[in-house]
Length: 257
Image 1 (cartoon, helix red, strand yellow):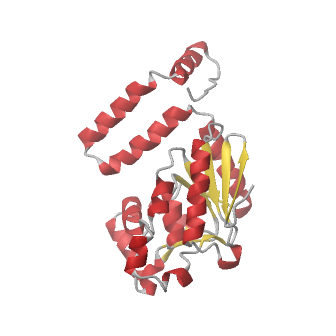
Image 2 (image 1 turned 90 degrees about the vertical axis):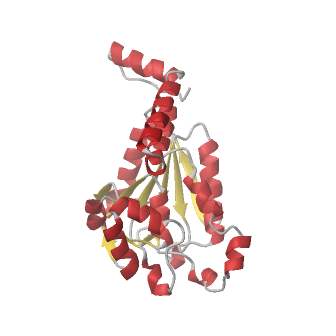
């Protein structure tokens, strides 16, 4: 199955999503982001899917926003159309999302990769927020997520100059999780997805939520959230299965219940 700007398919417990504007290096416009959010929502509600992989093509994950769309927009257009609402929908997906990045991940493309929970990149990947060269700043989370990932000084350098990070630089800076050869990218992302998919789904989703709460809450509030999530998981069948399997020295089979 596919939508016009987004291709997607299910492979067992993994949902695969591919940005599909190769003629413009997967430049992001409103229709693409809306379709992407719709697909992500669909996969999030599908009980068979436990992990989602988002990718582009070898030349570009996404080279940035569609400037033809943006150059004609006004502040009123952005407000009236809730321009970033679909970005918020993507960020609210409860299941883990792995970005598999080759080529350019710039501007909105870098912001979209950072919306994902894990990033696996090929050796050709380039990350950056070059919006300053267009007379604007990042608008889909670049100033916030890049700062959280890299720290103020490094984020400011990238945002104020429009410089790019290579895949190795991004790895050393803590922006991404792993760098692999181009030919290995899909297999590496899928292997990581399957490893996570084999874990108890409810615990995975609560763990994801708890980690992100660390940015939003005080330490004491974060600890309270973590403890409540910990308690809640003792009401699941997967907790019983996981601990029984450990004691019985066998592999656990988790059902998401």
